[in-house]
Length: 407
Picture 1 (cartoon, helix red, strand yellow):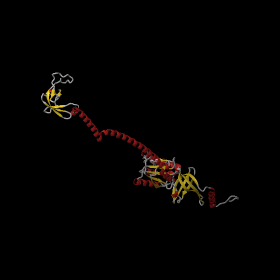
Picture 2 (spheres, one colour):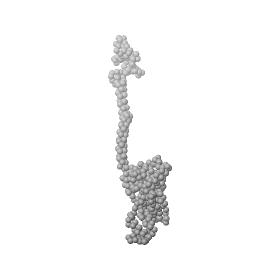
Picture 3 (cartoon, helix red, strand yellow):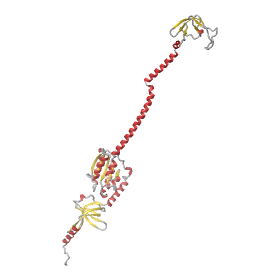
Picture 4 (cartoon, rainbow, N blue to C red):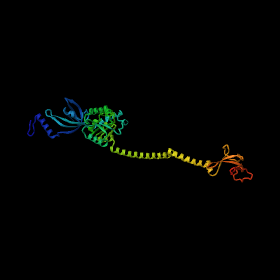
């Protein structure tokens, strides 16, 4: 049954021709959006069906490639597959050989919604459980991949803002099925935070697609972050990316650089603040010194008269004044002016004429000595009237030396 111009094949030849056609005419690699149906391991290989709801095709991840995958799919999970076609000539069987497999955005968002809803119901996302960040942290644990651009940004920012801070680097994988490694690192931080004297922790990852951040939507990782004994700052992905770990962390930063900016004070700003405080303190000290000088001057003026030397000088002036007063009031002063003191034989002062009888001897004290005199007669004036005229019969005391003493 052949006719001219129509090729004739054996079954093997036909299958081989189909394989050659696919090899020549189809892309060696392609990206496929699909849903995983009934994944199962057989002899170390992961077999599954990829479907979009209208059509399906078999797929396989060879055992040698399986450990390299960043995601292990579950039944019904949306995935993005990087693969190539495998055509087995003997059976004319067409299969997608999976080279890489990642969760689709819809799968990632569904996981995010499920885990965040569960943790929120337990109160782990409540704002009141967020701890304040330390003002000036001295020791910070940094969990990120090594080497990475995120680590370079963290180190550069820390050196620019606050070089005194000490960073403890804990390398972790940040993509793929690495929940166990991240949780183990977080457990180590929790156990040794007190011994290492940690003040805070930074969990960081550089940019990438939202699907690349799926590990940070893990419930295990989120709970490990919530159990950390020191404040946690997350800096995962880009500014628009939000993971469950961001919601659990004490502070969510848009990027790794922003995480270090939020945690560390600005060195230049701190210097300006210190300079401003120093100027203010200097002004306060100068004002206080001025006030104290004024107060001390006030007390000096009040205490100056109480100084021993001032007291001695004051006493000397007082004594001099008293001496002058006594000199002015002393009998000697009046004796110098011509007055005399008269005493009877008993030494009593004579101030009245009636105290003396005629013929009595009296002692007359002058400025430069004394006289002994005898009273020959007395002459009295009108009492308490010095200006009255002496009457002719008024008694007077005539002394033997010729003087007359008037009463």
